[in-house]
Image 1 (cartoon, helix red, strand yellow):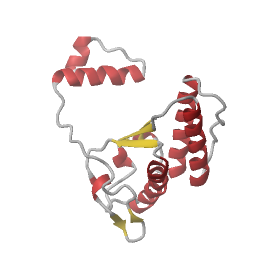
Image 2: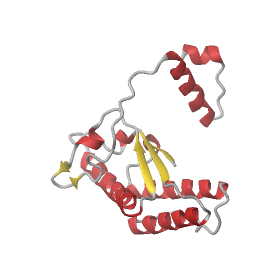
Image 3: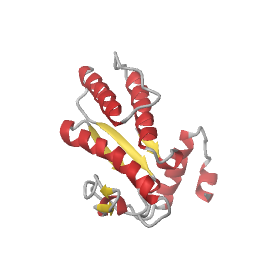
Length: 176
């Protein structure tokens, strides 16, 4: 599952619904049978139950690996603690990632990959006195990517283009 955090409101339920919809589509494409239809609205417990139903279906189809959830631009769902309205957003982040961490720890059914331009998501334990602790504190292995080489930049531009059916010619991608 690939989640671009810039595209979603900072509400745990929005993330839950999108994850389930993408999982359902991906599992259906891989011919996993007897999956419950994704719900249009879910709370944390409904998400957990449906997620586990999808994982059980995955395993019943003979697959053994965990699901991979990729959160791009996680900083949008994990703003600076001092930013305006950050407590409301951080509260939603905690609600979402508490469930995901629990699934990862208790059932080993999910691996989380987050992409951020700042490492705060992994480095702050107490978010605020009202929000409480970060469920993902020191849970991620940090990998600093550094700058891309020109060929890596071109490959990235061309790959991102395919997501939107954009085909870059080599010269245009090089100029970008």
